[in-house]
Length: 182
Image (cartoon, rainbow, N blue to C red; front, side, top):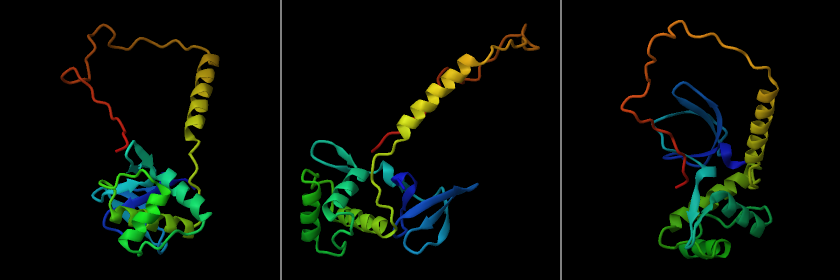
C-alpha cells in the first residue's frame, strides 16, 4: 500500500489509515491498535505522501527517506526511536547525509523512525513511486478517443436565447486551488 492513504493526525499518537469520508470529516483506523475513529475537519491532518524532509539542496519526499531506511535495514525495523539524540542524528546522517541540521530537529528524526517502524510492523513497507500519473494520462487519452468516436449531437437553443446572458463571476476574477508541497 502506498503512502497516499496514510495519515498523521496532530495530537494523536502513531499513524492512521484513511478508511472513508463522512459528512463532517472522515474515518481513520489507527495502525497502533486498529481502532477506528471519526476525525473532524478541526484536526490538523497530514498525508505522509505530502511530507518532505529539508536537505541542503532540496526537499526530499518522505517516501524516499523511508526507502533509504528500508534499503539500509533490508526491510526490517530501524533503530529504536527512544535512542539518544546523538544516536538518532548519527543514524539519520547515515541515511540522508545532506539533511539540513538547522531545520530537521531530533524530534523530527525520532518521529520519522517511529513512523517507519510502525509501517514495517503493519506490512506497509512499500515505498515505491506511485504509478498514478501514468494511469491518469492513459485515462485522459482514452477519454479523448471516446469523445472523437461519439457522434456529435445538436443542442437546442435555450428558451431565453434572446435575453442577455448573465455572468456568474463576481468582480471579474476567479480563484483556482493550487496544491503545493511545503
